[in-house]
Length: 230
Length: 230
DNA sequence: ACCTGAACACCGTTCAAGT
DNA sequence: ACCTGAACACCGTTCAAGT
Image 1: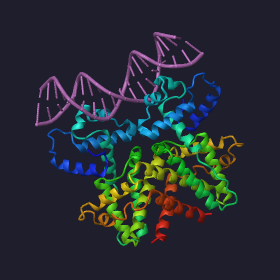
Image 2: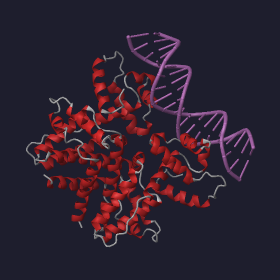
Image 3: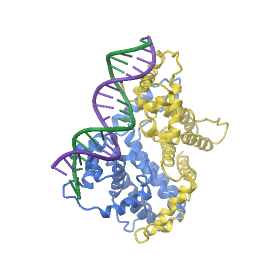
């Protein structure tokens, strides 16, 4: 009985899943995860309760425990499913830097398809099958690009952590839409100038950049660094 | 009735607080926040319930609603209190880069004094009094270091987001202790080599770096970038 | 005037009673 | 053999009844 999401837990689950037989009725793990994403996208991560999920599926809430160990397992499985949705383009002779940029933008895009789910990527390690496949693929590319093994590992962890946290900040912040960003600027402009002269002076610049701008700038900074370390 | 943690909410709170009178009994906001940190440090953020907090304080759970609007408010106030604990050293003629490094390491240190609280720094903007004071102070330094206004704002947001997410990953991951990192390496070494040749080959390098190493490397990368943009 | 126990509407999870 | 309603031990929050 390992903790949900740990390496040991994924191993237990893999061997247990092969023993499971298909159900005659319609309720499957896939349908459960589909419904969970619908609830999350429409009402947020906090709204994803076992009971709300059962209502969405039109079944008794206790029935879910036949397909899933509990609430936390649903979230962990969703995270790995989203990671499986990262499109991986053919390198096709492009320079390594362009391939890396592309892969990380795809990662970001996959995360932001379900903004409310992003905080779940921070709870524990990413060790599901899709997470491992992504790590394998990415590290192979980084090695082929000429990075030392230790640098490749550092680059993978730093870059993926950057992508994830950037998405979490974008999803949880209030600077996604044009009007939200203007409201933030206005707020800083309205502060008492005696206490916060710099914030008042910089109010027009505050949140002038979009989350995409910020992402691209951070990406450039980090890739420059690891490219130089090659 | 603005949402907890928003700019409007902090304004409402500030004007309401002045109207409050001191209580004859011992229960104060400060004591509540102290007790909350004790619970969080000892049992984690999820253990911080209104009822558990009241038990820690030895009072009825409904009494807390006299000092605090609810559960979320406690967390938001704790976040700003921790931000108030960032020590700010005198620049004292040191080069701007050294001052910035120092300030960001202090930020990190303050966050990691309460690892379980770190996820709370991602829920919404940081607009409390201590957050604003830190922003004012930091942006002034960045301007004095010669950054363009727009670059200074970008640098502040990117660097603080990096510090926060780095702490969140460190706190929620399983790579803090030596034995945890060795366990992670062992797990990657034990994967099927047919499916994951790169992960197996890199297992010794995986999690060889400490979270501190990763932090320092990322910090260097980002500061190099913004220093070059000066 | 202040405090708070009881009440309400929720949770996640278990299990025995149903089919 | 499978499903699930009822039950249990929790939540956050409200409010009327107590002092």
